[in-house]
Length: 157
Image (cartoon, rainbow, N blue to C red; front, side, top):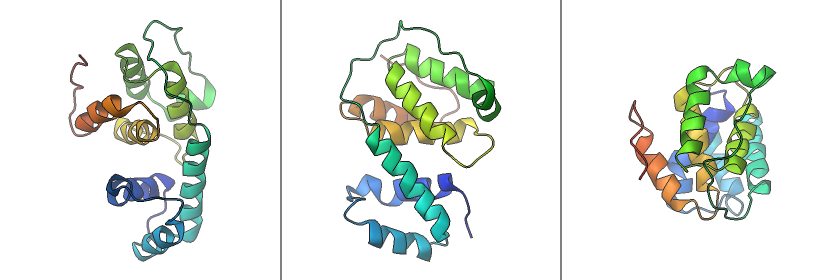
């Protein structure tokens, strides 16, 4: 059995969300498909709660700002996100892929995962899921999608 909220979210994202499925309307069929894929009902429910919280926090489309204040991480954030993850978030914000509100949403959703630590690949998936859920973030989502399987990020133009 697969036992991580992130595993459930990644499975949903890779198999359903890119196919324009309506997760609210299809929740029962999605849940059945996830159970058949080997996920536990408890982890499925946690993943749906994670997605619901993401949808509730969806801000309106905003213009990215790269000259805002510097984010200071503390306590549990430092424990969960290593230097590479924090540096990647700074890179995304400085290059206009994420604005400060989106960065905070990424952090909120990363902290809501049931893992003690996130590696850079896990964080990239969280960023991708957040951008997918943000109106007006299509270009940032497309850029981030191209970065999922490369070690060094491509410059943003």
